[in-house]
Image (cartoon, one colour):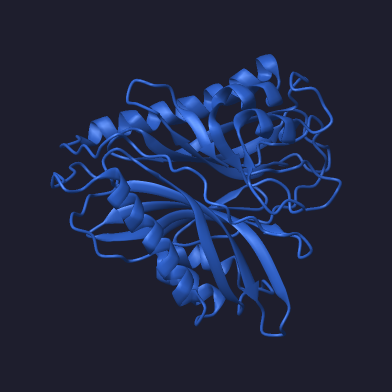
Length: 333
């Protein structure tokens, strides 16, 4: 990311108040796994299987973490793209520069065909897990390293969004933020985001569609709020207290907390500085339980440069409700 562009944190809404002419994003993909679980739940399908009484949020969260760690361990013996293919769903999605959201494993892996990392060996470790109340969707964040064939090394932070189907967890969306080689990574575990209990029930397709539209409306509301009170202030208001943002390449840890994220994305500007950008969700995934989801979209400058009228940056944001009646709050960007 060049010094002349907006600081594109997480879903790249973290633009500073002035948008420059060029957008250079480094958005890479990530992981998932195949642990065996006692009860399979669908993804965004019309029904969810009833969970046995012994299934708890903690046991399902452990499954997700084990899946992530298993794929990380197996990645050590596979080239970069092979390691990613093993853990991605066929319909995996990834934001890509400048304003694309790639869909499908071949399209996503094709984005790395010319990357210097394409034959690297990866390793990573999750530091937080979040879970939907039906045990069907989850997310992890973490830190990782890579070794290229020429011996050079890299490191990164990542976000993964998982869907469980037929006893298997696979990644539905992932992105990676490169971290400078001279920065120490922080792998301290963060408290999980877990529901009080796993509750499953039949969910009509119409209900899932309605929940997806509700989440997309929350993303639109986020942008609308930024127009009224400033981007920084909107980040402070719309985030969970312990939300995370991938932060810049100069930081080896995630930015934690809505207030800290707000300060980070505002940079030298006041939190209530007038917004020069807008954004919206073009698509979303929502767990059948209705309390965890992810949005995908594009951030646009209000006044695009004359030589780049389509300027912008694609993003994804992971959202959570602390209860079914609570409002959506972003938890990972």
